[in-house]
Image (cartoon, rainbow, N blue to C red; front, side):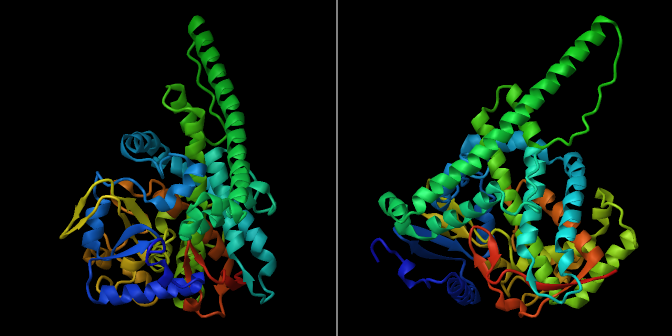
Amino acid sequence: MPILGSTWMLKWKITELTEQLFEWVSVFTAENQGAISVWVGPQPMVILLRPDYIKALLESNIVLTKGTEYEIMKNWLGLGLLLSTGDKWRNRRKLLTPAFHFSILNSFVSIYDKEAQIFIQQIGKYAGTKEIFDIFPFIKRCALDIICETSMGTKINAQTNHNHPYVKGVRRMNVLSFMYSRMPWMWIKPIWYASGYGGEYDRTLKLVTDFTRKVIEERKKEFLEKQRKISESTESSHENGISMPTKSNSRKSAFLDLLLSVQEEGLLTDEDIREEVDTFMFEGHDTTSSGMGWTLWCLAHHPKHQERVIQELDEVFGDSERPCTPDDLKELKYLENCIKEAMRLFPPVPMYTRLMEQDFECNDITIPKGATVFVSPMVVHRSISLWQKCQGYHPENFSEEFNLQRHPFAYIPFSAGPRNCIGQKFALMEEKTVLSWFFRHFKVEAELPMMENYPLLQVITVPSRGFPVKIIRRK
């Protein structure tokens, strides 16, 4: 229909919409369709269903521009790594890749470990009470503290200060951004502002970006002062003919420090840095909290797999309270399989889109210029033709045997190809660290049936009912 496109067919409630989309997709995948087309308002959208079609799109070095659904995010994230395209994206990717070197990621494990212990303390009051509580907000605050310290080098103590303005601001930005993307009539500015949401978005945007700018300004002063002292020390030692060892900085380096060092070479402005830091903040806490939450939810309903996780942890840590190390994480292979299987059923990012800036040949179809192409990991992850154990929760899907048999684009929780997630190792290391601490201390149970907690396909895959669980102290 004009203006509305196909949206008039869609259910209004997000839980009903999610169920409706699953029903539609199951029909088309059963027919082995490669792609289908719908209209979101006045915009044509092509949905790819099979991994061979998805491979053609995601491996392309030409189709790099994100879909118009991300337009509202540009006010917040600018043209950072997530939303930039073409040469700017290529240059940013090249600049930022060293920030995810394994040596830097290993240095972050102590931050994961420290925040995980605070998380354990925060939820400990529910252990032994048999009280059902929603663990999701606790996980999100833990992930937010981790990304703040690793990306900006600052602490906001979200786990102990639940009403921090930045914490509330980031949460609200996600809600408003999804609302805007889902409702085409909100794209008309007079309607957006007349609804009151436009003004609220602007105020919240200012709050979160001002906070980031302030942190950058403070960190930049520290960075320049440190560089000045190093320079003076070097000059002094050269003048005296003395070779002096450089003192190590006891404060952990953050992603922000790498960006500031690149800025010294004249490659980034202050606003460029702000864009990238806010991008890290956005992508680096909601996604990991979703991954950890769904893993706990799945294991709460599968005690057999939970016991295997606990057995593995006891083999690595014994009865100790010692910190988790990078070497420990390598040993937690079954826990990693459990996380990956949860991400198969409930991928943290429910969709990827690309805007066609020219006609694109995708296998046997031509996708026209101007169309948006939509890929949903949840669709391919639940395809009965691609997974021998498709229904239910089966960590053995990620055994070596099944990994070799599977189409490489049948599992894409971190996307794939040149625009794959730069932080996927960061995410897995964080999730394994936090969950290892959880299961060293607790077991988890749930009364609400697993699949009655619908995954809501928002900016991030979130549960319709939260994660209502009971935790039992192991010791």
